[in-house]
Image (cartoon, rainbow, N blue to C red; front, side, top):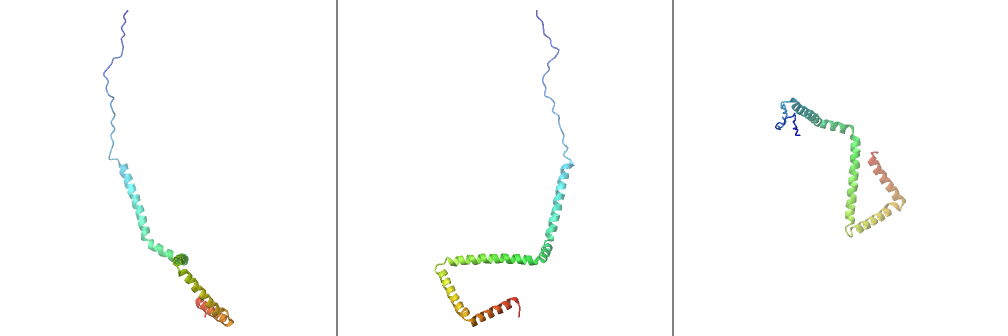
Length: 144
């Protein structure tokens, strides 16, 4: 019993499937629109910055005119702080020099003794000191 097997399908030679091709339109205007938009925004920002920098002297002079007293006060506080720091640094440097610090202490003690003897021992000298202090006070405050 030989039966032959027959198939209804026929085999054909294998071929590669066809690859679809996509064409890209390089003349698309969206890329150039984005570039133009970015350039326009950069130009607007640049115009605002240049206008601000052009008006900066006016802004600064108006600010200084409006806040003159607080600016002077802050400047004086900063200057006093710097002066104190410099004096402390100078005293620290002088204090490190041998024999200089004891010499200044001796001079200070001698001057304090002279001041006590000259102005504080007698009542008439104390009155003279009070008159001198009053004259300096009036000169500083602008009285008289």
